[in-house]
Length: 601
Image 1 (cartoon, helix red, strand yellow):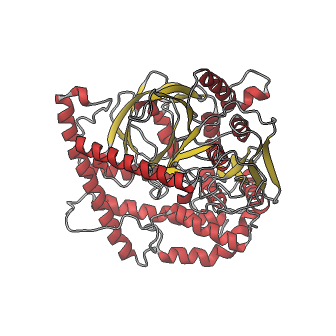
Image 2 (tube, helix red, strand yellow; image 1 turned 180 degrees about the vertical axis):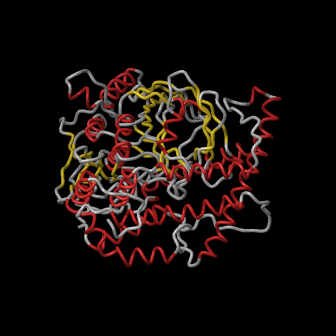
Image 3 (tube, one colour; image 1 turned 45 degrees about the vertical axis):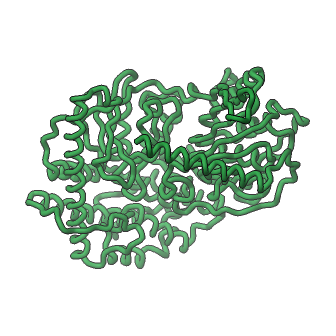
């Protein structure tokens, strides 16, 4: 590696073996059957540069041109040889440019800065890199001014909140205050930038390897990933049945990796129970166990996890805001850590009585089945122990609801991230008479059909509505699609995530672990659930920002396509006229509800 400008990164034999293993998996075993040739290697290099500098503000165009001329044609071949030197050289240039920014910012923050008169384009993802250092530094100056303005407004908002909350403690609703922060906006920003610079110094060679190899896998699709040993260990902790924390999963924000985004909430966990923490929130501060609020912009997800996680019964306050909003809009939410049993908040059921004016003489009894995920305790099942699963719990719930003489059933799959394929197949068997339920195609083109062959037995044969939203993914989409295709019920809500692929977990690498996409799901009609998702029969309001959420927002998402239909016999059909009427009535209700909400504000 003598031909690189790295700072002492010398690959170990284990790192070389791991690099060759990951490259071989992509070259031979990914669903796409796309060889790791010069074309793919060039794509990986481009995506790697963009992953380091997504807003195109650090690398100069001359940097990008230099690396592409030097390495584009051979980047893939280098990975197959186990050689990370090209990726490391790019990383060190990224570190150098970042340090130039930190140095300029530190010097500028020691002066009096005029915050008036400038405009800035915040989202530069689709713009070119700067051609000159002058263009780059002019932008850096405007960027620093914008950050100072945002921090200043945030401080003024905090002072106003503090005044109101201290006068009216009953309205705090679990929000803590950041009291007595005497730092100037420049001091706050300087501390934030110093942390980011220190984080660079703490990066290990394994973490740099992870950045390169993970980008290589993400160039194939968003769900193929490589995890370095530390991260792989963290994943094992998170996938265990018991966690002590607040019940959120997090990842760096794609457009601005200095910020950490909350991806999902564990149903029944402290964060979900608070009602104030939402998927998509950005974490900008954490106050641990009654200590002062720590600004965590620029922190790694590992460092943030270490602050959030703690002993049961202790409290943590997190400062969050929605994307595309200023820091001044942030809210502080205090939650008490708890032991989170992943299966503790499983399937729940209840009966709701509804009576339509001038239509129903007596109230209708509607069963509600809430399914947080398609869970299965694999380890307990493998060990021959008693275990819980979503199909076992759903069977018990349906039997209980049948005894309640319900007039219809609502299956709530909102925010359901998916889970076991076997479990969703078993559950569909409770609702349909018989026939195919889902088709699965592997990377060799082989198609497997999951079928319900129980002779027409149905645990529940009444009217069904399935509720979905943009956070309904994977197994949730398989369930909703089958109910829709068989005409067993209506799908209501918003279009689902569009994750129609399945991954294998690889724990046999020399270092770390990986997930690799090897299969794709298809509806019985032959259409994929990938990318397009399941479009509801009746649409409701979408609460998520489609631009930052779901498969369609991901880079390199697998395409939607079709295979042959699996012969099946529909059990019912909703006419176009019926669906048009239902959508019209739903739209009127939504508009009336919105008008009522506005009038009451």
